[in-house]
Image (cartoon, rainbow, N blue to C red; front, side):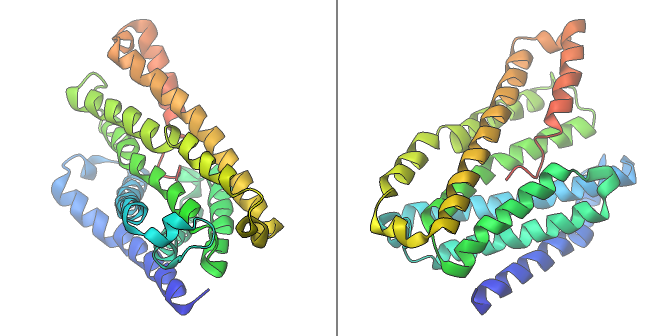
Length: 270
C-alpha cells in the first residue's frame, strides 16, 4: 500500500472521528431542536448516522464519477488504473475503522457482532484493492450501494423523533428509500455479474490468484443475498404504509415488528 493511500485512510479515520465527536453535536444542537432532548445513547447513534450519511454521499457520488469518466477502469475492470478507485476505497476504509472504534466504545448501546464481521470482511476485501490495485471496477461498483444509506438514516431520525409514520415526509422518505435501495443494490445485480462472468477464464482473471478470486466472488454473493433480504423487508414495510395497514391495530403491531427489522437496516449496511 502506497503512502498516499495510507495517508487517506488515516485522514479519513481522523476526519470522521472529529465530525462525530465535535462537528455533529454542535451542528445538530443548532439545527435540530429534538436533538437536545434525546438521551445520551441516542446522541451517539444520531451523530454516528450523520457521519454515515456524509460518508455515503462523498463515496457514492465519487463512485458515480468514476463509473462515468474513468475510462481505464471501465475498459479493464480487473487491472485498470486503480488510482481514483484506491482513493475512494481508502476513504471507506478509514470510515470502517472509525466505525469499528465507535462500536467498541459504545458496544452496549450500538454494538452488534454482525456489523463487526461485516466491517472486517470489507476491510479484508478492500485490502487487496489498496495493496495490489486489483479489481478496481468491481470494488468501486460495490460502493454505489452507499447512495441508499442517507434515506435509511433519515428513516431512523424520523423514528427517534417520534414523527408519525403516516406523516408526508416520512412516507416520502420511505418511498425514496425503497426506490433508491432497489436501484443501487438490486437492479444493478445483473449488470454486475454479467461483467464478473465475462472475466472468468481470461488471463486477467487467472493472474489474480486464488486469494483475490475467492474474496471477490464470496463477498459479492454474500452481500447480494443480504441486500435481497433487506430489500424484501423494506418493500414490505413500504407497502404496508402506502396501503394504510399501519394505521390499524393489527398494522400497529406489524409496524413495531418492522421497526425491529429496521434496526438491522442502519448505517452499517455498506
